[in-house]
Image (tube, rainbow, N blue to C red):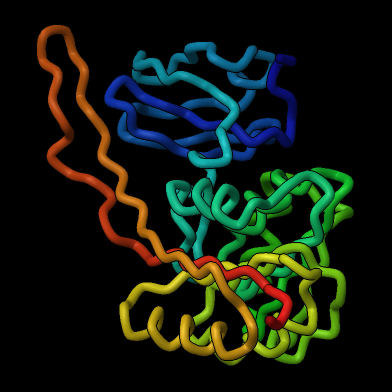
Length: 257
């Protein structure tokens, strides 16, 4: 991979695996407990290189993965965690070339995941009613991906969407049942809608609404993520884990009997 240049986004990792995101600029400096790191000392290095700070400590300079970026980027709304984003792409069967509608955009974490999954031949349309959330999401997406040509942002209520021929709909909304009728009109036959909800009562109401609108094959899961510590003979699960964040419910648009 090519060396870092001015304007690149770099992930700095110290010996204790603490991480920081930095946008490289000429003459810039990054200050931390490890001392001062000159951006000019990173520019020209290859990803994976160690760079020394003013105090003699070293940090590793890498290009951030999408998961690392999502966990470190600036947030407005709560982000969809990587464990859930990965599951959403699989459960909703988001494929290259698909047209996906999402609502709301939040801080843009799921938007970037969907854009990667549909590829340049696909399209993601994001609905958001809050301008502050939309602005933060656009900033986060642009910082990591530039300005994707296959992304459309609408500052509108997704329940009033006018799209047709949509392959997949992903709803990160507190009341997705409001969108059931609109989703039926927008999706292709057999299309999939996925809801992301934190509580059981919300899931129950969403399931009832989508079933009443002709959706079937409904399934609900949650994803738990537990890391492991592997250090020589010491192999054990981490003391902390990312437990419940949300229930993921999928429903498919079926033809009437």
